[in-house]
Amino acid sequence: MCFNISINKEPEELEKRFDAKFESGTDFEKIYHISALDSPALPIVNSEEPTRFDLYNWGLIPNWVKSSEQAENIRLKTVNARAESVFEKSSFKGPIKDKRCLVVADGFFEWREVGGKSYPYYIKLNDNSAFTFAGIWDVWKHKGNVERTFSIITTKANPLLAKIHNKKKRMPVILEDEKKWLKKDLEKDEIEALMKPYDQEKMEAYPVRRLITKDVEDNVPEVLEPYEYKELKFQQKTLF
Image (cartoon, rainbow, N blue to C red; front, side, top):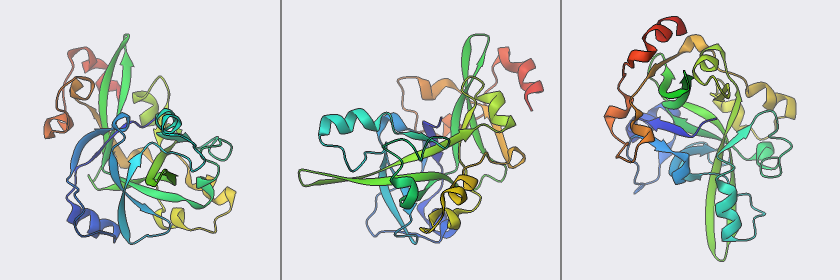
C-alpha cells in the first residue's frame, strides 16, 4: 500500500532531475507529507507528454464512470493498483496498457506494528534523491468537466519493507527504468518485469512522529524528522 508520500524538492530541482518542465504559472510547492485520502493534485509525467509535468489528482477515476457519486466512491478504492491484478481489474486494465506515468516523490510513509501498536516510518533512497513510482492514469469527462487522475502500483515488499509494513507486506513500485515504463509499445511481460520490488540496499527507513495520524498541520518539515520510541529501541537495533 502507498497512501502517504513526500515531494520535498523545489520545482527547479525536479525539472533538472526528470528533464521535464512545469507549465508557466503552475502553482507547486514542495510537500513534506500528503495523503491520498485528500485526492491531492501531484506532479506526474505521462506517456503522451514525457517532457512536461502535469498535475493529476491521486485516486484514479476510470473513463467509463457515469456519475459524480460513482466517481467519488471509486477514487478512494483506486489510490493503489496491485501489480498482480492490474491487468485484470476493470479500473486498471485499460490504463496499464497505454496510459502509464511517472509519479514523482522523494519518500513515503508506512506503518509498522509492534505489540499491538502502529508506528509510522519514513522511507527514502539512501542518497535523498527524487524518484518515481510506477503509475497509471486516466481522463474522466462528465458534464463539461475533465478530471485527470492516477493510481500508484504496489507489489510485494522487499525484505526491508516486509519488516516495516509487517501486516500487509506491500510496497509501491519504485521504477529503475523510467523511460521504458513510458514506452507505448510494451508487451504485457515487459510491463510485468518492471513492476518488481526495489533493491533494499538502495533504501533507508526510520521512525517518525505520529503527526501524520493526528488532526494537526502535517505538511511541515518536522514530519520527516527521525523520532525515537522507547518501546522500539530493541526492535530498531534488530530491524536492519
